[in-house]
Image (cartoon, rainbow, N blue to C red; front, top):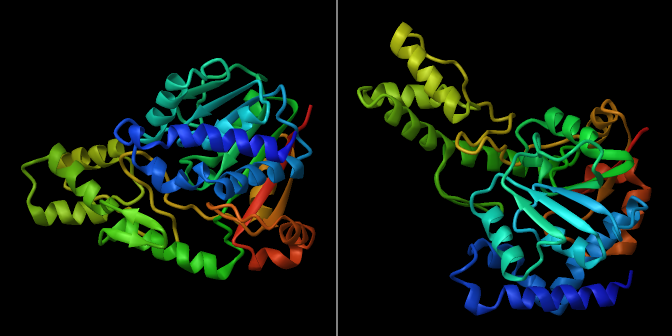
Amino acid sequence: MDLDAVTQRVQAFFSEVLAEKNRTRYHHGLWQSYGHVATPDGARRRVRFVFDLCELAHFSPEGKVILDAGCGYGVIATILVLMGANKVIGVDISEERLPTFARIIEDYQMGERLEAYQRTVEDTGLPNASVDAVVSNEAISHYYDIDAFLKETARVLKPGGVLLIADGNNAANPVRRRDTQRIWERFENGPPGEVHGHLLRTPYVEMRRQIIRSAAPELSEEIVEQMARRTSYMSRNEVVQAVRHYLASGQMPNSTFNPNRCPVNPLSGAHMEYMFYPPALARQIGSYGFRARHYAALGGAIPVWMSPLDRIFRLLTPLTLPLARAFRIVAVRLP
């Protein structure tokens, strides 16, 4: 694979996708998160990031079938296709990002090599042993059930296939852990606004208030408030069940927010920046029939194109992990 050639193809493709004429066609977040991919430097950074991830795993995407678990707008999936993948299947639960990816595939007639499905990573609907690699880029920290994802990954991967994880939520880094806990607090309790690069529109406690009011309009605001504060970590259905149980028994739920525990969006079921100790995550992955190894990394959600320094960080992982913002995991599916 030629880095320069792939970079040119990626920039040309996303220059078309991100043209002003498409502003009303695709979700605005595509420009906010990936507008830079239409520029030479931005395209090169993204492509270099994917090249480095594949190199770390000794994996070539050429001719392969790949699952992008939590694909979002499909940028990484598209890069993998432009690197020569035979097919990349993207799954995501987002009602904003995934439809935009599907529309891009349709608009640019990429359907033979790109597929987009609004499905969970825990239930992809793919056949057993049908993919050569599973990629999770800045996505695993939002999965609802990590064990279910790993079980599904082990099912769909061919023996010898690889799981590639890149994520910026490295709990071994105390600064990253502190900043992420502040994100947790704001997303659970508010107020709305920007927090460490994330835009919060509706706090989770307010989402639960709305669910409770809808399920039981007769409840007083005082009871609604108490119940909203005592249904943290519950999904919409679980909140509704808690409301029904209260109406039948008078017993309040008792699931209150813990500032040391990642909150859950009650509408989507997604975690908000779950944190991982990479060695523990690698061991967890290994228990599902993988040979897994973790690495310290510099780049997080926005790839850092500093390959030589990143390689040093990886080589010195036991020493550099507490300093690294991010981590990588490469896991090979055992026969």
